[in-house]
Image (cartoon, rainbow, N blue to C red; front, side, top):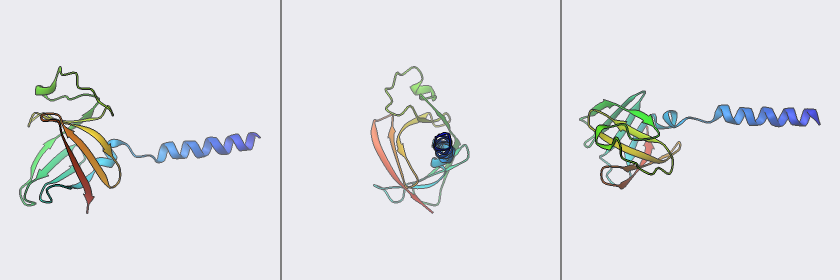
Length: 121
């Protein structure tokens, strides 16, 4: 019986350590499902965005349980996930509704619209 408990413990520990964090899942290039020219890219702590695939806006971002940008500070946004992407330079914030290896769904807090992206190479 002890061997069975030990085996179950090892299996659960392995699955906990193999799960990726939100930041890890965000890394890479994402293409909008509505506007194929809109590409968002996360590289480390930098968020890049292009509307034409050639010109890139680039700035640092933070992940937290609330919006950290100036316009949204103090707003009591109700989060379903507790994950927000904040960019201070552009004063923008997005709530992460979901992210996995292939799909990213955000709510732009400035307007409340939902944005969906698919992972590209």
